[in-house]
Length: 119
Image 1 (cartoon, rainbow, N blue to C red):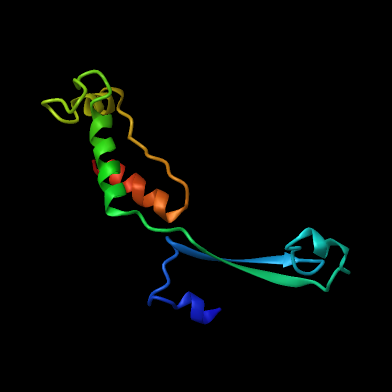
Image 2: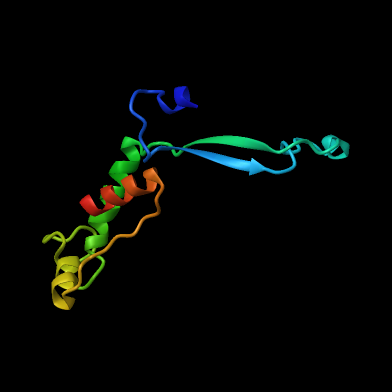
């Protein structure tokens, strides 16, 4: 377990996670042929998950969408207005609300949300 967590240097929680699942009746059945087998003793299932990484193309697309989103509100003229961000900034200042962008706890999703906000 320690070897897997230390792979590629520093363990980063944003892209990888480890999950231990208790199986009270032994291992999971891989096929219907195993259904007739006697139940085994309790065991732990180790699941290693890697969430992937945001690609450079994905980052560019998210930033591009963020720039386009700024022009969706009144004040922006769509298709990248001459005064970038006018519509969204006007909406933000008029209603005196903080702009919040929500994302799940998955690392790739957080990186995409950050790129969107940057755009």
